Length: 99
Image (tube, rainbow, N blue to C red; front, side, top):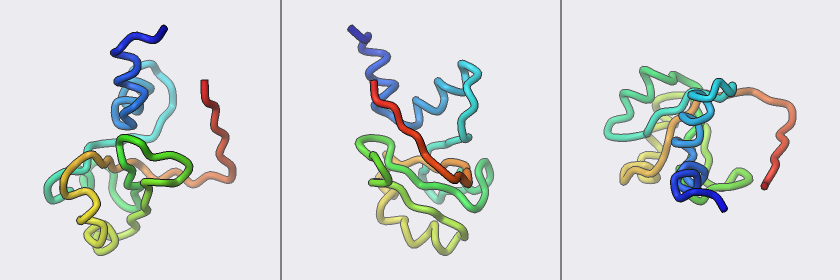
């Protein structure tokens, strides 16, 4: 049975990213999306992915911000927290595994 700590990690996409990076697993850089988003802009830059930290799946709870104007247009989604900004990674195919 998984520990409560591991369940806490797998339910939060930001904690997942940090745990993967700490373990040496390649993963996009991610930061909490908060306040005026200046940390996300400085650390991630544009384009960036915006993702809900809890409950999103298969594209649900994700947005792409290519410019500050696009990022600002999503402010109503992330103004109360629980979203992250993540490096944009162009890909051709996505594979998902659920265990």
